[in-house]
Structures are given as C-alpha cells and as structure tokens.
Image 1 (cartoon, each protein chain N blue to C red):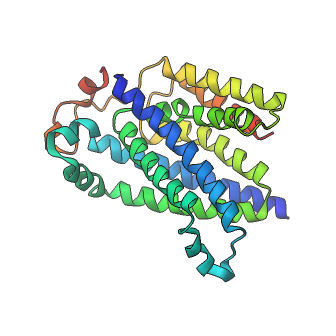
Image 2 (cartoon, chains in turn orange, green):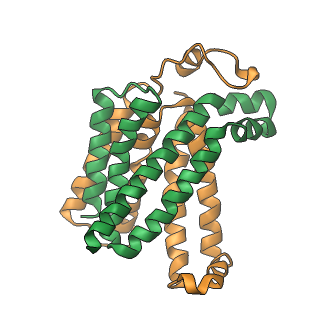
Image 3 (cartoon, each protein chain N blue to C red):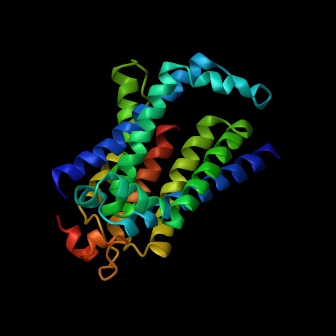
Length: 147
Length: 126
C-alpha cells in the first residue's frame, strides 16, 4: 500500500459521506417529491446543493472503482466505512447534535473493524496468472499487490 | 403486513446492492490497476477497457435496481430501520458473496471486521 492508495481510500470515504450529506441538505430545499409530480424532480437538479452532491458522488464512484482495481471488495468496504464515523462526529461537533451512548459504541465498533481489516493484506484472490484484461498491464496480479 | 413488505424491501436492497458491488469488483479486477493503466495508456483507454467488460453494465443495472428498491422500502418502512438494516446486512452479504464469487480469502480477520462494522452501523441508527 502506497500513500497514493491510502489517499484513494480516503477519497472513497470522504466523497461518499460529503456527497450524501449535500444531497440530503439539497432535498430539504426541494421538499417532498412524488411520482405524480415528476417535473419537480427535474427542478431538484437546479439546486446548488444537489448539483454539488451529485458531483461528489461521481468522484466517489471514480475513487471506489480505482480502489477495487487493486484491492479486494472485502478490504475496500470495511476500510472505507469510517465515513459513518465522520458523519456522526460532524453531527456532534458541527451541528451540535446529542450523540447517545449506543451511537458512541457503534462508532467504536466501526473503528475497531477498520483497524482489523487495514492490518491485513489488501488483495487475497490468487488469480496471479490471469493478469489484466488489457495487454498494457500484462504482468501478473500478484506482483502488483505488494506495493 | 406492512412489516413483511418492509423486510422484503430490505432483502431486495441487500441482494441488489451486493450483486452490484460484487459485479463492479469483478469488473475492476479484470481491468487491473487503474493508476498504472492510466499512466501507461491514458484515461480514454482506461474508460474503454472498463466499459467493454459486460459485468460493468450488469453492475450498473444492479445498482439502479438497488436504488429504486431502497426508495420503495423507505416508503413502506421507517428510514431509521430500513437504512441501517440494509447497510449492515449488505456488509455481511458482501463478505459471503466475495468469498463465493470473487474467491477472496475471507479469513477470520476480515470476518471480524465485517461483523464489527455491520454491528456498528446498526448501532449508529439505534
């Protein structure tokens, strides 16, 4: 794992929670939408929070796909679940919400889970001989994992 | 009766989002290290080699279905039940599916991580 790869994982974590928060903030401006008023949904796209939220979620998807190209799914998902913790802590310190004891225990469990998976290898499927579908990356997968 | 609908909805969300994640992971494992491919051949080639893999379109389809089943579930049940239940069951479902379909070695360390995160996510909304 290089610094660049940790930055990509941080990007997955940050863009997902920030994007979701912005969408949620934007939908409060837009209000209740129903299937009988489909045109209202188009109106949602003009809300600046929604636009920014969608852009951040696109950035999330790019980082997520990049991470999955060199790490296991069972590595990426727990490793990036710190986003839940970030959102809860933001609720506490930015929005001054009351954080009940059960939520602190939840934050503790997630952090412990992240620590567990981050201590292990990022890639475990031994498909070394197959390599990449693209000829430019012909070297075996196993040789790329150790970085 | 509404409870049955809610849990059926949660089941649909979990199933479709696990399918989406596993298919996307399968796609990207076939593409290989995106960073290296980008620096060697450029962004256009990266995009082309991702889109060319059939699993990618299936994954987008599964994620779309997952998004709509979440919308429907939210109209049947409370957000404080549906969102954390779906999120935490998805972590467990992904660990099982990654082992079966992606041949990832889900050892004790990863199981503990998946269960801790699943439990933590459930508690966050409790």
